[in-house]
Length: 547
Image (cartoon, rainbow, N blue to C red; front, side, top):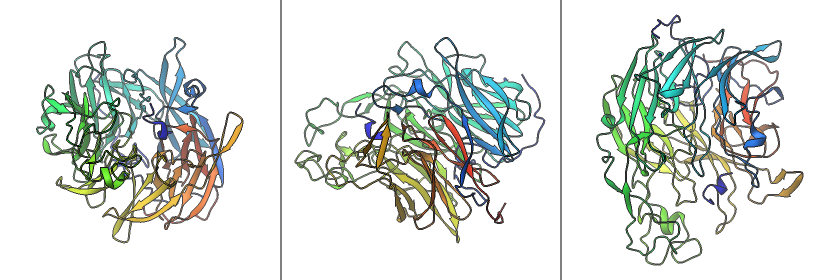
């Protein structure tokens, strides 16, 4: 799908003590490491198939067959599954809800539905629908809602306990920005921002905040501007990129890109905060009008600034390196400096963009991994690595829309991510890979997607480029077995070393925005395809969990 990316609150006291769900949020936990402390079950059969988005036939783009919709991760605790659902409202709009599904005698039974008044941000050309992602904490489900609020929902009955509102009113122009995240004490963190004007993507926002909600429902609102003192002022002129209509990129070897107002810093629309073991909160932000000015931000547990690091001009791998030689087909013009991003004539910059669902991941050593976007290396982005003190440690040249999983083993850890290749105009087909990296970002192993036949609309063709891994957050079990879904409609289980253990079809091939994989305490594996939530598993001798 991404090969076509640019071809184009009442006060109540919480009744429950903080509890830790098994898969409580996007990425599984507060650090977003995507790891399960159990053995996942074999991919023997589809145990449940639940339609959570019945609107898919109307959402697939005519002509391309692509589904430009992001979906939430299921929240898993015991035999409960809490999932985001969509439905037509009857007036051309969409209603969102949270359902509690429960395993009973081998069936996944729908127990309740909680309607919410969340709506996505206003649409714009080329935009993909953001994910409606809840979080499970303190014995409740907390769901994003209108006006930058949260609805606290009883997990057993589905009753809405209260609306948690950090603002004076419910303003329809204020939105929750990205999935909420919960720390080990049951505090909830999320971003919010207020849009303005008839063309809200072309004018600056009216405000952006980091919100904290305690288990008792008390809220703290911190303006983003106070957390990123090193960012340009909203009205500052900030360098952007050359126009797409330019005859060549860069126009000349000494061309300077145009500058536009930066706008205010806010969280990425699909980016969840990550919380480290010491309570540090990590955010990824960008200037509302110019995402070439993006930041990784560390916030102390008392919500004071800790540090911020710009993602700008971190890469030196553009012209003549990741791109063909200057003057060659697909290369930069002769005379362009080696290593620059041809779109800016500067070193490459990591970008936090609203099409991406990438969220920061806190590794076992406290370092932070983030998948940033870059255009110049064929939309593939860069996986960036920072120390807990904010030092930049380096990158790997794929990071687009990926929240890697972490497998801890033998006193160290590995980083499991995807690596798709979106353009083959001037290179031999390298395939699409699941890639495992060591803490120094060296490749430990790769597995190439083997599928080559694409079947859509009743016709099957050989797809020379192969199929992408349409996963934004893989899952890994206690043994290091990796679970990923692909655009060929299959869910894969991969061994350490990069071997295929098994795969199981979930549906037909479909170009789709990326979706997450999750594993529950019984080892059932959950994946999504075409608006369906699938639970997969089978009988096996139970291995002992470390939990």
